[in-house]
Amino acid sequence: MKKVIIMALMVVTAATFAQEKETKKGDSQTRAAAMEAMTPEQRAELRVKQMTLHLDLTEKQRTEIKKIVLENSKKSEAKKAEMKAKKADRKAMSAEERYAMQNERLDNQIAMKAEMKKILTKEQFEKFEEKQAMQKQRMAKKKMGKFKNKEEKSKLKF
Image (cartoon, rainbow, N blue to C red; front, side, top):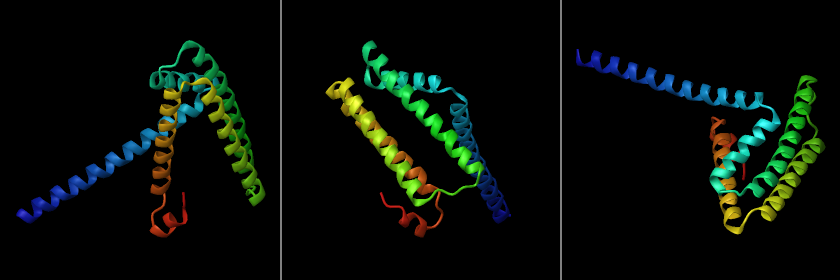
């Protein structure tokens, strides 16, 4: 009798944990879809407000950063549309295209960093860099979690 009760508890517990994980996954997908439905202007506004809270930006800094973030958001939107079109045509990216895309992305990041360095104070820029590093780590963890076996994880080198 004890064994039956213990087994029933284990089944209920396992089912509960499985449902919680699915809910969390669904929530992140819902948030991602909501962000994608926003216009570049709306995403830029939210990003600037988050930065204002985190970095205590002045009004002048907010307006300058909003211009930069809006420009980047529009570029990102255009790139997404381009990638969707390529995906719809089922064209795989060549090594040269992949290289050019990564090179452009890194150039944009370098330019953004330089602009932010001009606008922010030294302390604000340090906080900004810390936040960027934390986001990069979080994305790396998320990317590592997508692979189920260790061989695939070991192929990714950061």
